[in-house]
Amino acid sequence: MTSNIKNMSVLVFADSAEGKFKKSAFEVVSYGKKVAEQLGSNLIVLTINANNNEKLYVYGAEKVVSVANDSLAIFNAKAYASVIKQVADAQDSSIVIFDSSINGLFVAPMMAVALDAGYASNVVALPSSINPFKVKRKAFSSKAFSNTIISTDKKVIGVSKNSYGIHENAVSGVTESFDAVLSDADLGVTSVKIERITGQVTIADADTVVSAGRGLKGPENWGMIEELADVLGAATACSKPVSDLGWRPHGEHVGQTGKPVASNLYIAIGISGAIQHLAGINASKVKVVINTDPEAPFFKAADYGIVGDAFEVVPKLIEKLKAFKEA
Amino acid sequence: MKILVCISHVPDTTSKINFTENDTKFDVNGVQFVINPYDEFSLTRAMWFKEKQGASVTVVNVGNVSTEPTLRKALAIGADDAIRVNMEATDGLSVAKQLAEVVKNGGYDLVLAGRESIDYNGGMVPGMLASLLDYNFVNGCVAMEVDETSVSLSREIDGGSEVLSTSIPLVVAGQKGIVEEKDLRIPNMRGIMMARKKPLNVIEPVPAENATSIESFEKPAPKGAVKLVDADNIDELINLLHNEAKVI
Image (cartoon, rainbow over all chains, first blue to last red; front, side, top):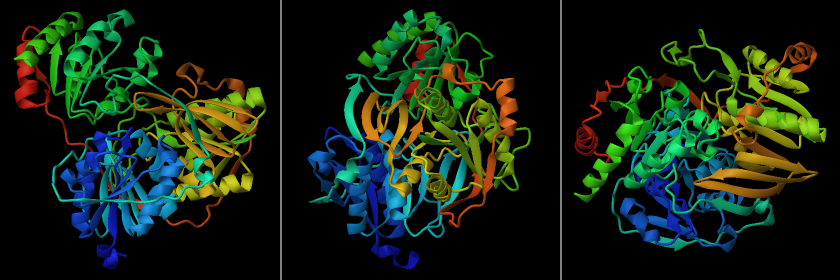
């Protein structure tokens, strides 16, 4: 209960891929540090097969618990949940915090059952109160927020991507290793093959997303979209009709039933802005729309807009951005 | 193979979202409710297993009587029978505990659900259910084949997909890809007529405390008006993005 919460810890799982921390790891460590301060308890950060654990000290990780285990080389949700549970028990953790990456979303609900904890996903801010424990969450596909109270002693939180931000808070940290015990039962789902397009910025990781819709008229016109994305170091995305027509792969479909986007900059080209599309990209901080139709609903949702033909505007934008980047 | 498909009853994707009673309740006034789109992809995959591999398909919802038309729609699409757990669904963990009871009592070996619901977007019930049952679990599934008890699936990962191998008993949270948009079925008149005669069993919930509760809702702050930039003045856009928005 609240009285002994001070002696308990806040545990953050900092996810990595091939040893390298994901950007979201720094965000959840930043977040966890503040929550630990609010509670007056210690922050513990768990990493699995990560290199350079000291990078987390910059964001306030006083103590990193590092697990190195070859059986965990490829992400396995049940095995990861088992390891996180072992560390949560060993560290007497009252709160376990995850990011909202695909892996975070996979493990967090399993963790909630393991700890018999209430779980709040899509959390966008620090707890607004500790007793009762109250957090603000995205709901209705970003069309609203809910203020949710978690009433269980133990709590699991999923921090919505790019909502809290990465905050430096340098401490002199220590890293301890932890020997996790795994059983065959933890490996009931096995990875056969990973198919990943390498060398491309993923929508999940991108600071900027360049997205195009039916206004582009056909898949053969995507060259300029890719070039614009290239200049900006951005990921490419598309509207639902475009993926349904097979012009672009499904993985690029963003919107309510596609991938959610929470980038810093979202540029929509030839996308009218159906309510479902806007719901999916709402969490992006700055939105730019380029569309021939000044009545397109996207203009109501955007921060900046150009009424104009994409085939004229985009090449000019590429040229000007190149000059800007070189300057 | 006994399949249970979990169905959420959610506002249509085009719904305007409003709240009543001091922003504590979702305003259902004028809102059209549908099968949660993610659940519909999984339900459609279940129909395929029924038709090609002789599986039985039960649909379940945790909710009050107002969700029954949505369950009837799932029956019209082709599910064999439906179960409604008579409880307002307000917390993921307590809903998962109800569903775990349904799975145990019914002996279902494959549970299909959607990745998340489009109302509360919790994305938690399938994973919780799998853990409560100690079933295997795959989240964000975009392809799935079953051969006897062995199952081959793909899930979406950042920048690609991962092929997974597992076995029944299993919980799968699906999304577009487990079937395609064009595979979704609109119930025909015969399906709708038959659905009226199919069993819809209402069962009372088992005791399970809510782990979370929603105190209030709020809507995003109204947005300022868009700043329009002339199509011939791209420099101004770059200036605004660099100096004002600070995103490039």
